[in-house]
Image (cartoon, rainbow, N blue to C red; front, side, top):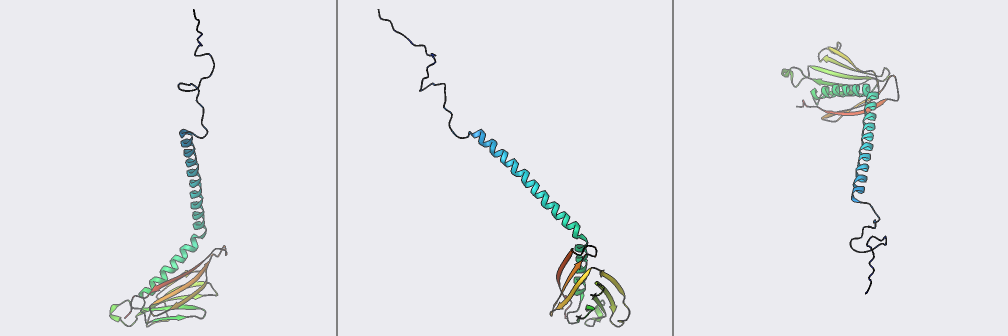
Length: 195
């Protein structure tokens, strides 16, 4: 009789081929590892972006707080200047360049007086006092102002210039407490009451 020896399948010897229980791990990342890495880097980028935006907004807020009084005053000056020039007659304007320099704009309140001015307004800059003063007069009585308002007490320079239809004002404001805080402004207004 012939004897046949069979080897047990689980003898501990490794087999290769189909049905092998051992898998060789490939080099690289799995899809789950890549997804987790992308999510982590996205969260880090969002956090860093939020910090950057907050820092930028805080800087802007602090700048506005530091310069708010000068910004508000320059806005008030520009509004007063533009309102005055827009009401003026385009052929009746006077600019004085010596100290105190001034801009005088003639206008009419009563339409029946057109084309003759019945009133005028003046912005006067005094470089010694560093002030800008607004005054309103009747055209037939230049000795007594109807209204007077101190527009600024922080003005360190002011110039006026005109062409045939527009007037330009350039000025510098300096904070009285902290002289490093300054604002240089140039504004132009167009006369709208021409003939």
